Amino acid sequence: MFAVEIAHLTKVYGQGETKVVAIADASFQVVPGELIAILGPSGSGKTTLLTSIGLINEPSQGRVVIDGQLLADDGWLPGVDLKRVRREKLGFIFQHHNLIPFLTALENVMVALEINGHSRAAAKARALELLAALNLSRRPHNYPAALSGGEAQRVAIARALANRPKVILADEPTAALDTENGKNVMAMLKQIAVENRSAVLVVTHDQRMVEGFDRIFEVRDGRIVKESKG
Ligand SMILES: Nc1ncnc2c1ncn2[C@@H]1O[C@H](COP(=O)(O)OP(=O)(O)OP(=O)(O)O)[C@@H](O)[C@H]1O
Ligand SMILES: [Mg+2]
Image (cartoon, rainbow, N blue to C red; front, top):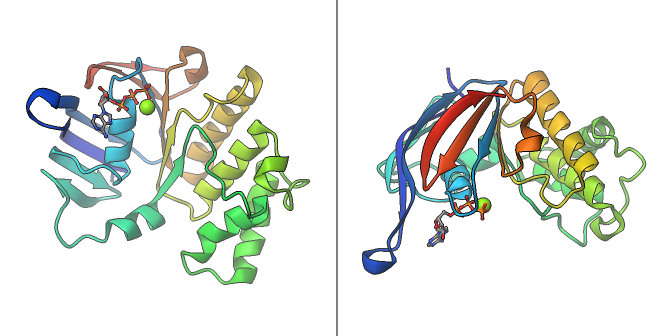
């Protein structure tokens, strides 16, 4: 079974003179454990592609299937609890870490587990394990403001991984980091794909960051114009 399958996905914003075709007829499939890069210039539709797959942005046309479940078919499928699918099957990582500023690193990760029904004790144990795996054992009680950019991004990754999502969607996760931290984050995403058997889709416009990816999709004006090996 595919982790992600899109078919003839199209997203149009606005209408009339302000109409923008942000994604036009995109189709691909991603298997569990695959690491995919989505490359393209600013405005080419990368974020729209990711948020459409991520059930944040309603597709205008085409299908979105996550982990075998049809979720959009020319618009959302009626009767689907999108929030629940998002919470249980997807993990998001953004350019800026989006951590909750008044919670510590540990609490930021625990929240993701507690809203999915884990007890406080179980959430704490799993969060500590995740932070350790991301080299953050020494920082569990720091607030986001007291973390470096790379550390904060790793906490955000820990949070995205908390519920062992089938699909991880990362939008420019290295853009706010220096090259070394950026490469570390990419290496971690690769490891996660392999070890957790998650499909990991990473948007970037930095060609240097996609070394070792399984496949690279290049997007121009809303179209996937090229697919290559990493
Ligand atoms: N909410 C929106 N309403 C109208 N147009 C939008 C909206 N979001 C994006 N667009 C337009 O859709 C196109 C694709 O935008 P998108 O944000 O997906 O590009 P991107 O490749 O992620 O760019 P960047 O690299 O700058 O983040 C652009 O022309 C953009 O102006
Ligand atoms: Mg974008």
